[in-house]
Image (tube, rainbow, N blue to C red; front, side, top):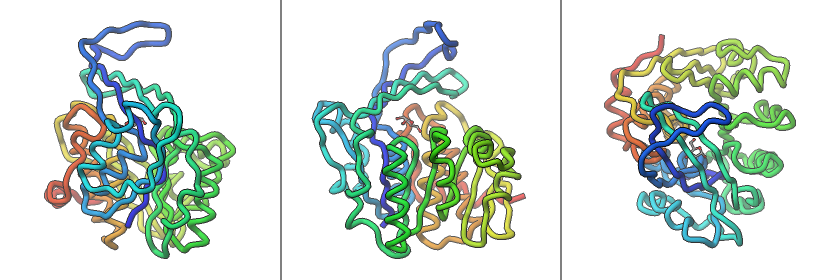
Length: 301
Ligand code: RIB
């Protein structure tokens, strides 16, 4: 079982002719709502990629909660670790321009009150605990300690960019996935190179996998002495929201099946690419067979 300890949001999405600059108003037509949140998106992506998945997190006691959980429930993600708290479910306000690029503002709501104590019965030797940066850093820190004690494997995607105080968590995990901006910031905090290849080389160990996602340029990733650069396939891009989450979920699912590293990364890139095909972070998270078919066309360089 893969456990995702992270955020659950409802996303309000508006298609814009272009993203606004600070202080500017840009109007689009009707809004659409979609389930979102990096924790929930990654849980769904791992489930669609074939893994058994448990979600641990929080929603509010409000009408947004069930909408936010709908896709996880339909996909058969175990929601017994999701608590309903007084307060508002996390909400994200997302503008998407025609190129598929987005801008996201998040009202964290009950995601800011999750507790690592809720993981008590969820951590088991060899199983993957998957976390992101949309729940409080102190709880992620405690969860990492608990996962180490239980012998679980820790998969961290510190997105959005963490506070300096939590940058060092990069050194305590088994799998680290960042984008270029996160690599640059964490590299600066830790006094390490911030360029993708330098960042990977500085943080890999024989056991630790480090991946830097590069958007339309794919991914640079390494473990031990193996370093791979995998370029993505050409796909239609409607909305890049959740592409990184689909990458993480599919990678966790592949690692959970003990898939060889190069193939696991090809599956992750395939999933991230396919996830750009429809509006909404979870809408186009692909199923295992679609991921496998596209991954068959990819190779490391
Ligand atoms: O990574 C995409 C996600 O970031 C969106 O679903 C939104 O909820 C924000 O958490």
